[in-house]
Length: 255
Length: 263
Ligand SMILES: Nc1ncnc2c1ncn2[C@@H]1O[C@H](COP(=O)(O)OP(=O)(O)OP(=O)(O)O)[C@@H](O)[C@H]1O
Ligand SMILES: [Mg+2]
Image (cartoon, each protein chain N blue to C red):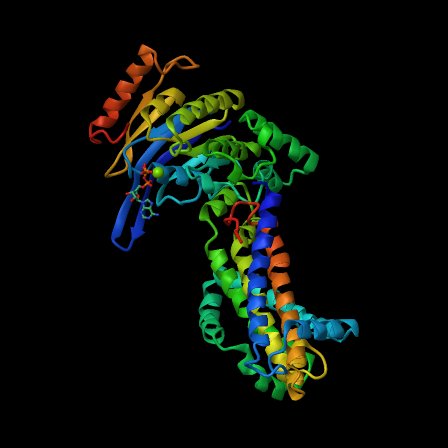
């Protein structure tokens, strides 16, 4: 599990309507095995930042290094989970999807199958190994996506609002499951969310971003013992604090 | 309703619509409004069909036609599929071929038969090339659309998992574009089948379902013509339902990439 250093990263989008600020001068240091949430109002550049870390976008200025190695393009040291359920390959079963990265890595079959099944067990989908994605619920599809991103054993897991499209009850289950998975695998996780309670439940530290320009406003440490109780006084207190950080110039966009 | 009951119902519905149409035809044929040689009754047609199947001629005609269509269709896939992919992946290829396809696709293949006959004579070469012409463009065009419609998220996810160009192509782009590729094959086959019968009418000698129809005209054999039409319709239907229908059920329908067809 690798530490991540993000230094003075900026990126603008060129659009027909002129330049749009993506992110401006973002610097964050993330420890190995740390769980970091990024929150902020819509359009402040959370996805942009995550895509830069994933290597899908190249920053105009600044550098990112993972475990001391500078990031250039995407690499197998990072696993990515998107918000959209459609990220899974519909022509592959759950097992086939999870096996994809291992196939690319050249892992041969008895071993590949074993690892993929192990990952599906981790996200509690061992009964659905041979189901195609369209026969799985949204939450199950996102669990397959998590298993898929973990299967080739990257040191960093990048997640962009993976549970945002789920109903509240399923989301609670998924957060609990993710906390368990993280405890077991000890990946370094960067997790983008809109949801304050989600950030407080999952994160070691929360990076609060502000819009115009999209940059880091504050970083808040969450020092609650795990597993966390969302109904405890301390939890609600943290939530209030985080809300205050966000509320300053967001007019309650966060919920 | 179980799956089996449902497919039985579909079968009954299909048979019913055929039966009603046949009954109407029979009523008109027996009405005496038209000479019986020009509008033979169904038993006469069936007789002609059975006779030609018994002595093997109809089977040979169908075999010739199928040979030509499969040859041309295979060529069209070998050319049209990579062409469509290249067009979608490289702008320069697209700029060159897209206007060409738009200009050539609307020309009916039948209109080219006389020209091809001048160039290649009568026989297999001309008929196969007509099939090839008819089928290549829909194949390329649909493949092009399919590759462009591949979800960028799949490419991103695959890239993040370390897929190289080769794996991206075979394991993401081709299956991702498969609903369109199968549609392309269906349209290509349909146009090929229409094209081959037309081409055989004037550019084939002695064998082929199209040739049978044209030849029967000389002897006023309307029953033979209609028998050949029945065979043409039957083979076309069998391909559409059995070959492409099965292909679709086993792939894109199973993967939930297209809705299940009813009927
Ligand atoms: N592909 C793009 N082309 C042009 N501008 C873009 C593009 N992607 C994002 N932007 C702009 O960059 C800014 C940051 O967008 P980004 O998607 O990173 O925000 P976000 O924080 O993820 O928002 P949300 O919470 O709504 O997902 C926004 O102003 C957005 O309009
Ligand atoms: Mg976003």
